[in-house]
Length: 307
Image (cartoon, one colour):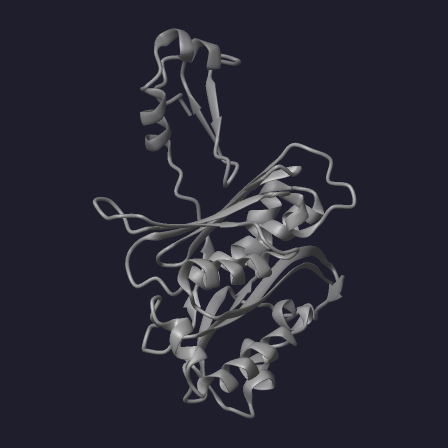
């Protein structure tokens, strides 16, 4: 368990950067209150919480690149005791996540918790817009390895990544979850090119600059990603000071769920009276959001229950 000074606190943000004048671009994410809120609400076993925290960091890193008002959804499914891990990022910085745990997780960690299965990445561009979805095997012991494989297989973008999650302690304060991550990608043009990334990289002198950047990312220590006493800018300088690094504006992120009573009431309206009756307990129907764990209460006919 890491220890941090009581007066030092991370904010929640994604920081984009560019290595020198090269085609290597990246982002670094720091999560404090957001990931603590998400993981504390669920109270999963430590290993599951750590994996879910990595998934939240991953969608923040990926979602911050969205250029439209939409949502990025990460989902890992398998035959392990944590058979489903879900995290999503909504444009503007809203994060949420959940997991399905149904087995013994003793002595199991990382992606082995999910078991053999697959990863689905979905980009939802909103109503009346086509969804983009990529499916890859759940490959690698760490979630960062699975993410790198996804980018290479589905998008042909060379990617390097490190993710870290932990609970930090400070004198006189309760332990809190913290998470962080860093990713770099070879982006041959402004904003990147899904179709051309690998072709251009493997056929030019950029291979050396990419290899250097990817190797530097892999040296990033866990504490550098989650310790609030180490600024994100300091981490980037440590890694890339020889080549130079350009830093862009921070993008704030936060824990925020999209659930509301109106949506749930609309779902309940699809059930007939006998089905609704089966849901009644203590004279009300209680629906708990699987993401934020908030309870919504309705009367026996599916309408809003009195406060």
